[in-house]
Image (cartoon, rainbow over all chains, first blue to last red; front, side, top):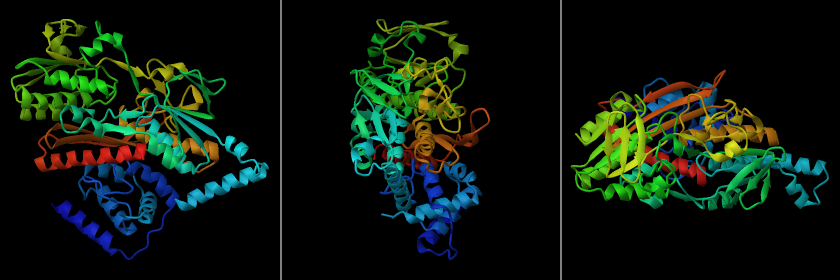
Amino acid sequence: MKAVALAACLLAAASAGAHAEEVTGDIEYGQYLSSECVACHADSGHNPGIPQIAGMDAAGMVSILTAYKNKELVNPTMQTIAGRLDDEQMAALAVYYASLKAD
Amino acid sequence: MTSMNRRHFSALFAGTAATGLLAAPNIARAAKPRVVVVGGGAGGATAARYLAKDSGGAIDVTLIEASKRYYTCFFSNLYLGGYRGYDSIGHGYETLAFNHGVNVVHEWAASVDTAGKKVMLASGASVPYDKLVLSPGIDIKYDSVEGYSVEAQDAMPHAWKSGTQVQLLKAQVEAMKEGGTFVMVAPPNPYRCPPGPYERVSMIAKILKVKNPTAKIIVLDPKEKFSKQALFQEGWQKHYTGMVEWLGPDVHGGIKSVNPETMEIVTDIDTFKADAATVIPAQKAGSIAFAAGVTDGDWVPIDQATMAAKANADIYVLGDATVAGDMPKSGFSANSQAKVAANAIRGELTGSKVFPARYSNTCWSLIYDNDGIKVGASYQPGAEKIESVDSFISQTGETAELRKTTYEESEGWYTSITTDMFS
């Protein structure tokens, strides 16, 4: 429950753009890295069972990935994916996904 | 994305201008590098799509796939168990052609002229390539189980390549006499989809629990242990109490032969009489891999950083046909490998930036209504092979809520990966 609450909080922060700091990253690298994400997270369209990440605020995405990496969020698939992302890779992904249009 | 396409367009424009071909667009078009992809499954369809999409038209991509409609192996078990309609696991190639300009050729690729760099079609035509991607999946080694054959697969379907074989198996399970016996002969390692046989057992048990609750399922396994074993056995005990009996080699003593006429399966200790059966034999790389001369034994060794065949730098091989180190033979793996190969091929042919290879896989399985489990890992190229970085697996005793979430996640994954292959 604690993890769910944290996720909800992070998502709310992400959508509200509450994170003031700017994320800078290599968008082309982000696009390449995103090929790992799109097997589950569709680039567009609503997909029940898997959260939508296209169009997510960049700072919010970095927060969520960091929380998975630190195992504060529990989904083991995401812990494994985020576990090997370094700061540069997280920023690249976040900048790329922020550039996509949310539905 | 836009900037990337613009960059590629500029590069192409500069190239044609420099060689003075601007006034002859047909020649310019013919001068594009050509990639031919054989096999339109999780590896091939993904590779064709990423090559065409990410090169922004700078690469001429041809996909050769005999079937006009592709029925995924993954989730064919959910069709078997009545959780999905058959049509819901079928996909066409029209969108790859329409959205990305992939040339889709519905023919059988018979062989490869590696010296002339051409794929030879069964019709007699040939398709030239600069780089070739083979994603041929598996072939069944019919003679690995004595008494089994192409003819025997009507009576004892392997149903390991999706499609009509799965429809046949479902009909045979549903037609079993009351209190009858279903027998599975499980495959030896390595084979496509490690948890697949045991998810199939679960789905057949689900059919029988509803239609024929006194029926029994016997699994004759050549392996001493299997993928997600504790999770499956816990689930069988919970949902199908007393219905499923799994026998390893220490119990049956070895699978000797099958007889599709009498529906008998002979092991060292006993002969089992089945009312319906599935025999999943040993497997090998699809035949085109052998024709291309890239196999070693039954499978294709690959370069762990690029997925290029060790035997031929112009031929990339994806998915079940390969020896992919720690990665299992799965649709998810093939999809992941396709993106690494597409990135490497684009780099070679167009000079685009090549990023370091990274791979991942998750295999979901369904045991019963809303009882989903998963196993997965991230991978990277190691010194000798593709090696696991980190892995996870569902735990026994998880809450019903978590299992439901895992099942719903698998449904979402199916939508996304098939979109990633075919859209």
